[in-house]
Length: 342
Figure 1 (tube, one colour):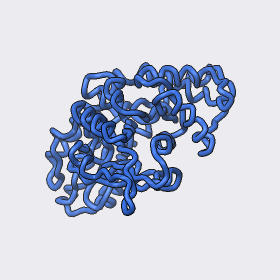
Figure 2 (figure 1 turned 30 degrees about the horizontal axis):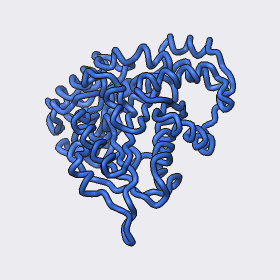
Figure 3 (figure 1 turned 90 degrees about the vertical axis):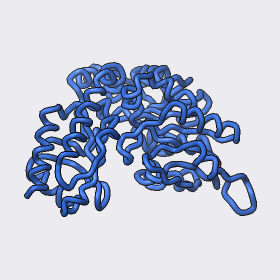
């Protein structure tokens, strides 16, 4: 099967498997797993933050970040298609006691002017704003990127208003590859950063939350409350260390393959996409002109050995990763063209 559903489907590389087998482990809840400790130190260094915390999932990382940076009864500003709003089971409300103030954007990228207009002070009527969350790259907008000027403007404006900024950087290494600048530079203006090891970096599981030492220490307790104390988890951290060092240099290949997909999709009758907007490894395209429902297209593609997800009644999403090469992308385009033509 050619699996373009997500970059979460990547399999561990041989180097990761060897590292997992040979990993030195201890009890991480006691802080005694040496491999986890090395991963957290390296992640903090790459993120440009004082400390980092290894968590099972990006959802847990985002959940802990919101809890650390807000108080019950506050609002969290984010884009209307943000992952923490649509795909994290309302953990902002369930765990942090906050509500989301969603801003509709064209491409998933907030501007300071949009954020500024939605900031609410403490009053007898409104929940006060406590946090701004930005998603970089933006998943459902098609892997779009924040310009550094926009990040600085949002973070500076928020700080002047006494607010914090969390960066959901699940795919921040894709952003770094596309922009040609290090992760630490992208994340520097935000108080906290979450990034995933298990997407384009290819590790089997795990994410990191990075930020100030005092917040990360408190976050360790929240991780335990959420059931994230994983004991001898160095077997996973070992793969994460390999992912951090070996995978980022080749993410540009995924971006090139995504651009190839975008250009090929634009030539298929009934499919609408602007290939120029494909800048990382996510390709969102409109199939409304084909006369077929996205779910039906997915089912027919599966019969032809191609897996792609649909995201609503008009759109589908393909995500490139190192387990799908250029030839596989070419075959996926042929299958999709055949489905539409038939």
